[in-house]
Length: 508
Image 1 (tube, rainbow, N blue to C red):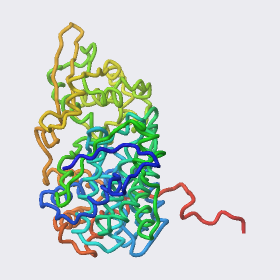
Image 2 (image 1 turned 180 degrees about the vertical axis):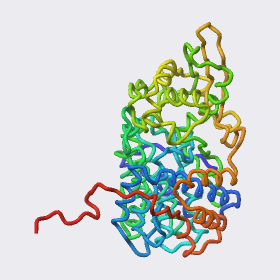
Image 3 (image 1 turned 60 degrees about the vertical axis):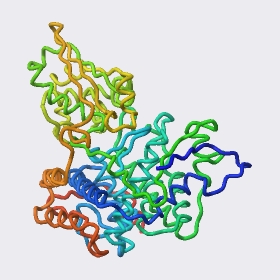
Image 4 (image 1 turned 120 degrees about the vertical axis):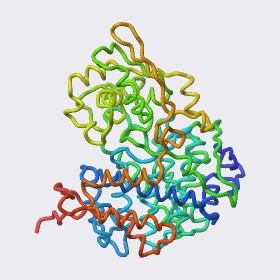
């Protein structure tokens, strides 16, 4: 890997294109280095996992909405939509939209955390949709997904967005554009323009994850994927983009990030170096914000040690800056303590999550968020006894580059009414690559079967898994098999009309 210093530049300053970050990203995406077998295997795992969490979300309102919007944009050859028969296809940007919302809705897919945070699996829907539309093979898809993961992880390592209240989809737009370019075998010049356009149109604020969090949290990455597809299409037709988008005098760094004096250090592979970043990312075993994963596992361990939870006076979670200020009491969001809060808000309240995991000894993607579950008096009482504290040591470990040190958990102190203290800690989730039980192919398959059983018929599950098993060898026709068709009797339709697919409202 080579570290690239990236800073703002004056318009009058000589700044060759080859030194611009967007060009360097494009060069990495265009590099035809072979994808290693270990990486291809993990890409298959993440395709399975995306389908699993999408299956579990198919009848949730945002997913039903996005699917209805996509189905109003039929296209040939088109791209498949999760839940719908593979021969009913939509324009690729709309298929990516629907599938991206389905994947993201339950906050249940993979994650990578460094200077910023991300869900790299959000790259898969747009890259797959374009590969299907453009008649690419499984090998092309693997190459594109490997590039998308690489670019997103490298941007997340080098550029912090959240300290400037910019949402992390600003890294997703460029990575998806780069991945699409790699899958299509586009030249660096074209990919560069698409990357710049994608960044320009996907830079949004973090209010989507603050206060009363809405369904837009699920739509936001799908929007980035949709914009990336449109950016690549424009670039392929010879259109340009604002440049240099990162370094320009009125650009991303100068006005939205650290300003003219800031320097960001972004690692990127050297020419000919394999793209392995997906192996650094990690899967969620529980449907909750990633910083809660290790703490859910810890709560399940602590429950039997505590016994009667009514004896608890207070619980203090000593954790990292991010956990404290984003999903902890440091956020100072009263909504995080309210039993009538939205699912999206509860998902970002470690106080609620820890209380429920402690009481139930488990975590469920639906039952743990049910309104009646959040309103239980004993849960509310316990929930309000929990607070977080930033611990500099956990913050240091959160930002560590050494995987053996890097941590996303915390230390929990349970103070009982009689003054006794029960303590335990967990650095990483059990499913983390450094955890007690790292996810393997069999774990991804088991999670898929568990989440899909309620809506995807068993023969369809088996067909999908068999298709993924042949991923690098898939033909263009086979690529349509990377879809899951729901039992039509169990798949809900949108009952609310919008603009798309709606009859002409003008008077006769």
